[in-house]
Every structure is written in structure tokens, then in C-alpha cells.
Image: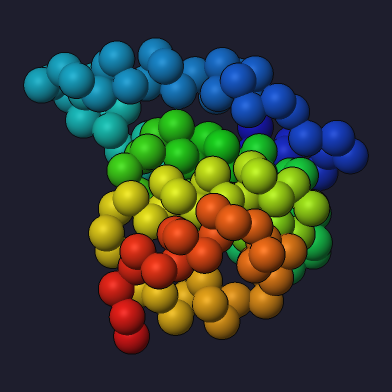
Amino acid sequence: MLEELRQSEVPPLVKQFLRDLGIGALERKARRQDWKGTTARRLLATVFADTSFYLTRDLLEQKRWNHAAAALGVATAIRPEDPGPWYNLACAYSSMGRVDDAVEALAKACASGRLRRELPENDPDLEAVRDHPGYRRLVESLSPP
């Protein structure tokens, strides 16, 4: 499925992509305390690593913003508390000119409390959101360098 995303011309909708990957079923199985739960947790960790880093890195380098956003949508669904995929999703949205969506994703990344101010301030991928009123409030709420 992830390779299909890489090869596709049009990325799938995130909800459909999550269904096709069987993420909901894996999350239910992951709560079990047996070998099926262990297997499901490992599969979720693998899909998360691919969609939050490996696949996304390649798609962002290729400037395939919509595809990267679809992959990151899966990563944020698997681990909504992790700021990394939210931050990268903000960068992808910003690069697409989806400023409001970028600020919303950045807010979710900032909510973790683990993001440092210098990262968004120096990231050229967030240039499109710098004039958004919500951006300045978010950045000022972050820890200084």
C-alpha cells in the first residue's frame, strides 16, 4: 500500500488510506496482551516509521506535497501525540499554500511541548505561514533556543 502511494499520480484520501491499510483493526488488536497484540503493535510501529519518516522524506524531497500529506495523515492517526509528523504535515501544507491547515498542524506539533522555537522560525518550508496571525502566537508560546 505504501509503495502504491509512492507510485500513484493522485494520493488517496487519508480516511480511505487508513481503511486500506487496516489501521483501525490493527489498533484494536494492539490492545491485546497476546502474540496477536504484539504483532499488531509491531506492524503499527513499522507503518508509523514509514509514513512519518522514510516514505515522507522521499516524497518531501520530490516536492510531492499532497502525497506526503497523505502519508503524514496516517502517521498522525497512529500516534497523534507525536509532534514530528504534525510538524512535517505543517511544512507540507505550507508548501501547498494551505496556510490555515499548516497553522492547525503546527499547533498540534506545538501542543506536545517538545518543539523548540528555532525550528519553525528557521524552516524555509514554513515561509508561507509566517504572516498568519496564529503562527506568531504559536511560535511565541514555544521554548526559546
